[in-house]
Length: 160
Image (cartoon, rainbow, N blue to C red; front, side, top):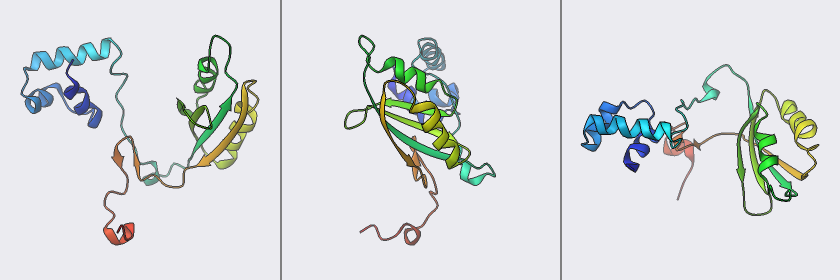
């Protein structure tokens, strides 16, 4: 398994097999075969663009919700996680260590829409004991991509 191919694609999904072959000094046929294998076996789950929505006219609110659960016998947290990740506004669900069991990342058009999701969809789930909602105010870095990378030192503040 060539992890370098995966790292390159993770950093820039627009790279072609030809570019990767040159970058890694590998035969093109080998790179294509490895990428096809990664796609077939589910190692590569998909390709996507990272969009800075703040630079568009689209209004949205992102929230991270900590969820405390009662695990189910023989199923643990999986069934509840599945119920939550099937809602269209849910972007990510993680099983966590610490005070809360799940961390849920959602997007809504307004804070009111996020509050509705928590009160009407999430909180009524039988296994949910409690939630704590945190609204994202500004993204600095997400999935390895810097936002506002053009800020100069004065705009970032004194980092010393």
